[in-house]
Length: 336
Image (cartoon, rainbow, N blue to C red; front, side, top):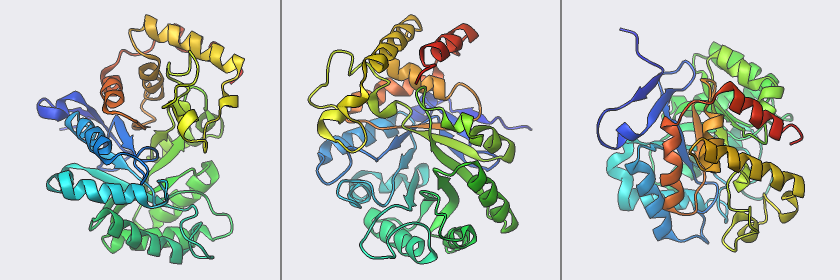
C-alpha cells in the first residue's frame, strides 16, 4: 500500500486539518501550526494563551513552535508552555509536536549565543526545564553561525537527539549553502535534518530567489514557513489606520508604522479585494498562497486571540489558486 503525503483524518478534531509529510521523514505537520513568538510572554494574559491553545488543538493544530528566547522576557514563552502542559496538555503529549530552538542571545557572556556545542547543550537542558518536558519533538539551530564550524553545531544536535532530549533535528534561517552542508553532514551521521524553518510570504519570497525552496524539495527536507502574514501586514487590520491592540502599537521590535507606506497599503488593498473574490479574508488567502504547492508542509501562525486561529484553520481545505489569480498576486507585488 502506498501512503499519501497528505493525510486528513475522518473523525474528531483531526478531521478539520490536513497533515503533510515533512520531507522524506515519517513525521507529518499540520498544515497550520501555532507559533509562540508573540503573545505568550510574561507580559501577556495567561487565560488568553490557554484559550488560544485549546482552540488550536481542538481544531487539529498539533504543533506548538517555540524558541529559547521567545518572550518577552526571554525564556518566558517556554515557561508559559510549561504551565500550559501542567494545567491542560500533559495528557495529550503524544498527540502534540512541541519544538524549540537555540541560536540567538539567551544569557550574558560568551556561551549564550550562536552555535557552539556548549551553548546548544546548555540551552536544550534549560528549555526542557522551563517547558516541564522530557524531550522536544524537534530541536532547531535557530540561525547560521559562520564563526563556529558547522560540524560542531551539527554534531551537538546529533548528540542531543541520541540522548533522547529531541526526536528530530531542524534548522532555521539557513540559506541554501548552509542547508546543503548540513544535509550532507547529517546524512553521513544517519541522523538527518528533516526541516528548515524560513520566512516566507507573498511579500517576502527570499526562499524562492536563494534556491532554498527548490533544494529542500529535491533533498527531502521539509519547509515550515514563519511570518506568512508579514507580521500582520497581510491582513485587513491596517487598512483603516493602526489599531491600539495591533503589533505595531504594542510591540515595536519587528514592525513599524513607517513600514506601512502608501505603496504597501495600496498592495494590501488590492490583495484584500482579490481575497474577497475568492471568498476568503486576506489572511486566509495569504496563508493559502504559502501552501499552494507541496514544497511547504506547514505555515506558522501567530495569534492574539482565539478567533484569529479559528479563522485561519480553514486554509487547510481552501480552493486552489487559478493561474490568473497567481499572476494577479505577482503583478500586485512586483515592487515588494
